[in-house]
Image (tube, rainbow, N blue to C red; front, side, top):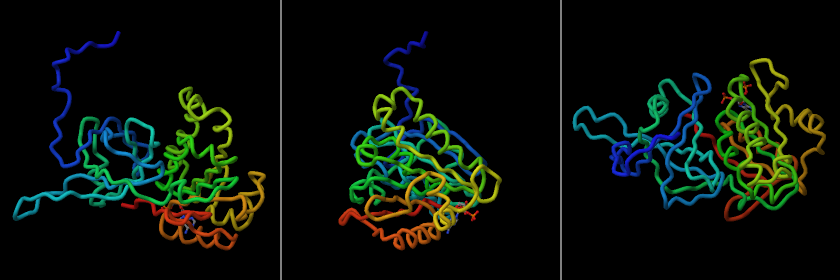
Length: 282
Ligand code: A2P
């Protein structure tokens, strides 16, 4: 039986004290460098799956004035646009001004969330196509966690190929669990349809720790392994669309490969064949 609380018991609800405060509802740690968390969603916040917002905490008090300023960073929203809560996937950087603190949040704590979503990893910035590639490294998986739970992804594409490259196997956990759960979750099957979920082709690779598939995705595109492993034709501008999210160097290298295959970068104002966003790094 569930516990019954009197309706007058509001003590459990923390009173927002930060500007644009949202309350943490869940936190999960994957490795000593990676964690995800969920927060309440402002009632007025509308966003497109794949977009990012600025989130953070109050910084340390100024040594002389004692004043505190918000410490904010861009974070892709990892939950889909229809979700009641917001999910984020984050790195923990030992001396990172924000993540060294953010990694200690607990349910009930507050974070700051500026409700102004923006970004180019959105369906509006891509021309229609047959196959959608999602190329992620590290925490660059976050926007795809949103887009993989977005019905439009499957309405627009016949096949959805998700590549995720990390140094070690444990760093793949968030993405691997998300896709495995998605494929068996009854609510998601009802919402997206079994046919939609069958369109997902997950292609995880590692570069430092041994795993079933090793190598940078850029190398696996160049040597053709990605296409032979999945049994799909090489990249072509007519059928293929791509969304890219990783480090600056990764994004640059993938962009060069997309352009070499004849794909053009798109933007909200001018949709194209591929779009790019930098993953939050520290
Ligand atoms: P590698 O181990 O060969 O550097 P990081 O943890 O540094 O953000 O990297 C995440 C993953 O992305 C690692 O597996 C890394 O491979 C890979 N990676 C980093 N830079 C590039 C790049 N320019 N092109 C392709 N993959 C990259």
